[in-house]
Image (cartoon, rainbow, N blue to C red; front, side):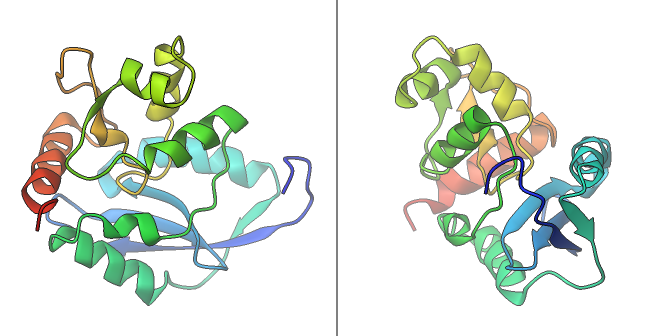
Length: 179
């Protein structure tokens, strides 16, 4: 689909309960994830979603998220930490953001990368700041694992859901990755 397409996509939303707070999940009519964000971070979601809805390409409709999506999140939080990569996505960023988010899904649970190292993995060794910006605009929290990117010295850096959640997610994945 090109960015100029007039095709319209219906979106449904639901909430998934997790040990670190409820997630609001929005998916399209084909059950591809469109947005995942912690419920208490709704300011990030509102801004991103408002822009997409204003484009006329998307509309919210009555419905519920798929059982597959709910079951996959439950499995992740039960310790099957690689399972989120099986969920289909509807990416709606710039070409760089989409490339970055797609590649970020290849970073395996239990692994962390510095922004610069990830930029090199993308084949753009001078793009660490662009990676940081795209990471900060990621609309698919946890599923596109932005929490796996850290500072050059390995320190935990910004995370839209808060550093406590980032630490929890990294610890959870490290604990369960070998299981």
